[in-house]
Length: 259
Ligand SMILES: Cc1cc2nc3c(=O)[nH]c(=O)nc-3n(C[C@H](O)[C@H](O)[C@H](O)COP(=O)(O)OP(=O)(O)OC[C@H]3O[C@@H](n4cnc5c(N)ncnc54)[C@H](O)[C@@H]3O)c2cc1C
Ligand code: FES
Image 1 (tube, rainbow, N blue to C red):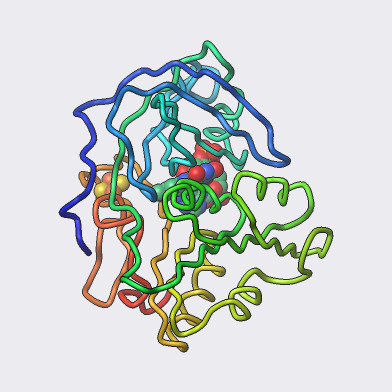
Image 2: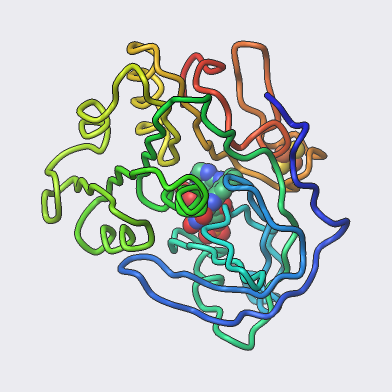
């Protein structure tokens, strides 16, 4: 893992204004104006809504939640992609222009550029398309994206020239995105992937069998985001690593299994 050129987060969190909200099928994109350093593709932020960040009668605060940056615009605006899966993401999906969002980041180690001559392929599943959009902006690589159904597949519009697969066959190829990967990949490829663990495990196994390098953006529960709580550790061939500081992007070859 090369952390040498990691972008360092400014100390402490900062309150940033939300400037836009858009709906893309099953997903919400919230844009926020940030004066912090530009993130590297694959880095993430710990986010907290400026107000009403809590649950129950006493609105007891939640911990911040980890999110990949979806895209960075020239003026410093950052886009984040949310899927409502629980109380934190539900609150973040409600944010509208004029609201405040606390940001801590950019954090972690993002994607590393391909070795000279290797052809990059981006592979995303569901909300895992988020870090691939900003990486595609920089690399210009083709994308293979998998979704549950047509409503989720509307998220594909956030990337360019994507080949889409859906589980129910309602849009694009009927089947798993890894079947598209099997078609597109060759010995000169390098794969960049983010998605649910079973998809990442299939990408890891396939790239390993073909001897193709792959970088996987993983998830784990994160309480702090900067190495203090050890809540995010994942096993690798060289021992446990903290995904928030040593990842979230890891070389597939470092992993025995994505669980
Ligand atoms: C580096 C990183 C980048 C991420 N980027 C995005 C993103 O761009 N967009 C997005 O929508 N989500 C992203 N996530 C996941 C996001 O952090 C969780 O979905 C969020 O914390 C859920 O909070 P909640 O309060 O809505 O739901 P909770 O009630 O906390 O959880 C709802 C469900 O999701 C599961 N869950 C919660 N957190 C995680 C996690 N980190 N990994 C796996 N399962 C989890 C829980 O077990 C539960 O089943 C990312 C996570 C990490 C670690
Ligand atoms: S989230 Fe606390 S150490 Fe990684």
